[in-house]
Image (cartoon, rainbow, N blue to C red; front, side):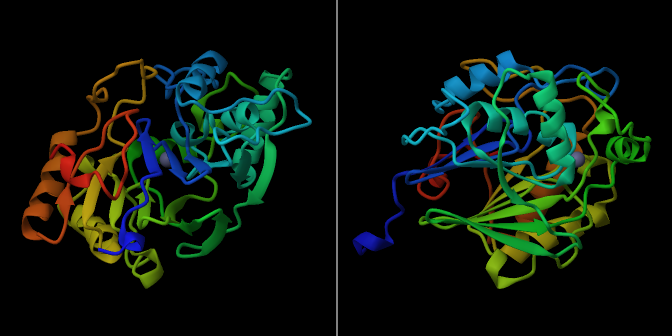
Length: 325
Ligand SMILES: [Zn+2]
C-alpha cells in the first residue's frame, strides 16, 4: 500500500445524538446540527436553547470559545463552520448559539437566520453569530457546494419525512413575532438538505430525514463510503415507502457502511460517560430497524453498523471495530 492510500489519521467524527455531528479533517472542523439542549416534551411545551447545556457541550468537545466579538478563535481547536440540515428544533435549536459561542460561521437559510436573531435576543450578552454562506437550494435535487480546507460540502435539497409530528409542526400557523421560549411550531423546516462531505479519507453522506427521496441522490458525485441514515418516523410508514427510501439512499450512494440515526428520544441532554441513547416509545423503532435489517440481509454490499456517542471515531479506518447492530 502506498502511503497516500492510507486513511489520514486525523479524520474524526463525533456523534451527539439525533443527527448531530462534529467532523474534523486535518485542522478544519465542521458541525452539523449540534442539537444538544434536548428539551423535555418539546412538542407540547415552550423550548429554548439552553446556554448552560450548550456551553458544557462545547467545552466537552474541546472547542475554543470566543474571547471577544472582534475576533474569532484561530487555534487548532476552533470550530470553522456549522449548519443545520433543516429548521426544525431537533436540528436547529442550538445551531446559532453554538455559532455565537465558538465564532464558527453560520451556514443558514432564512429560517435558521431567524432562529439566530431570536437566539441573540435571548442572550444579548453573547456575540452575534458570524454570517457564513446562505443556503440557497430551492427544489429537490438542487445542490450547493462549499469548501472548507480539504473538505467539500455538498448540500442537497431533499424532501422531509412525511410523519404526523412534522406535518403538524409545518401545518400549525407560525407567529412571525415569536421570541424564545417558544413553541416548536415557530421553527419551520425551511430549506431541508442532506449533507455530502468529501474528505481526504473518503466520502460521507448524512441524510437526516426519511422523505420520498426517489432518485435525488442517484448521481456519481453523491457516492459515499459511509451513510448516516435518518430513520425517524419510518416505522410508521408503509414497507414499500421504506424500501424505496433504502433504495434511494443506500443503493444510490453505493455505501459500504450504513449507520441508522435520528431514532433516539430527543431528551434529556446527554451526560458524561453516557453509553447509548434513550429509546423513544413513539418511534416504532423495532419495525424500522427490522425493515432495515431485512434490507441489509438481501443486499450484502453494505453492512449495518452503529457508532458510539461522544467517543471520537474515524469513519473510514475504525469501521471494522464497530459494534454490529
Ligand atoms: Zn424535521
